[in-house]
Length: 316
Length: 316
Image (tube, rainbow over all chains, first blue to last red; front, side, top):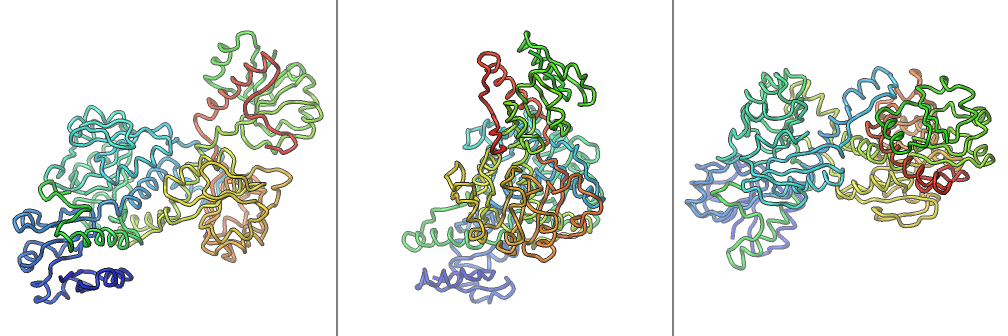
């Protein structure tokens, strides 16, 4: 059994070799360093690099399982994996904590007016009159009710917020006060002070949101995107912000990444930009390796996987 | 029964008059507008203005109860109230939500490096490499375990943090993983990534923290003060920050308020200042009026008060 990682895993390398003494592990710093012969022979691949495309899969004839260390699998050739019957697991849940922390960092930056407050400090103004909005009077609506929004909704409840979750069927989910069908969203947006996209990129979510969505929101709405940038075209989100269909947005993901210096988003004064970093965490590699370990034990025993198996048809 | 408020209460004025038709309410915009005769006759006072000093109490011979709409009662002449047997209730709990929101706004601003991130946005730099610290690996220590730290600790637990509370006796309190005696704090500080002062100002807490405290903390500690500024002298906190005994501080309260433009705190690059605003909230007046209502019902029936009664000896 040959397992190849397209990145170095630090302390986790020794850990994996100790846990699985009969498995051969090879760790490369970059996909370009992978020898052709190794690629032909490998059984399992660890990566979350965009180099893993259709041609890469074709050059890996023995590949049976990809342990993807990120959550979003949209850059992978899913049809090809299905055709070749290659199993895919992802890092679902690994990033829920970090993404939730970033979400509340955004929300509190906005609700507590931290940028204005910091300007006052720089101007040495002691303004005791400032009154800020309170989260316990706010309703937060999540597009998506998976592992990440469930974690975030638990924190929202601790802050006393009202939580609404939208998913395909409208089924009830832990930590959400109310759940509805995504398809009914236009008639629901007015209830939300904050709308958060946490949907994965799939054929069904590509450009799911249009100008119509933003027009249906309250003009005081704060929009947050920590899912995938392709949920809305750059043109539509810029138009919505410029025309104040919504009050402001915090965006971590974009239709094109990295964001170009010429992006019209940089010219708006009601958008706050981070660089697709809300999933980054010092412990992610460790957490994803724990998922790999559980799965590998089963894979060696029975050829099956038990955690975070991606449905190749659904794409998550 | 004459109840005088030294501030206007908006919608709450009509509400109180409707709830208590047999009580006379008078609402003034400012203490200076209060007629001497009214002051002599009033039974109950609603205020949180520093004008309520010893002379003011002397000029209010009929006063039986002060319904203080703030939590901190340190500006009141407590000895005089005790001597005159004037009851005192405060706004404890009214500000817990707002203060907790500000606390996490501070912590997430720091942990998620929001100021650096915003600078990158302004420089149009898309830096996908940033990795930030995670709250679920952090320990937060509260000096004080009352209503406000209990509310904040509940949110800290939702973020997965370890919570330590220090109080006079070291008794266990809801939402704190561990509690210890305040007197033992020097040997406990090393456990804390974040130290938050939420203690009221009393004779026992005045300048409770000294340089020795900050030297005993980890040099990576984040210090937050949302209690009272007199917990530490300006000189000591400035020295601790300048000499990096701690990493940084978020301060909402100060030994002297308003903070002078000449304050040395404004010259430091590891302190973030707000203007004693973390208790401000649009619903505070409404919440404090609900406490007044409960108490007034009992006061009219039996002369006793049931909620938020301040121990005049302890000062909270």
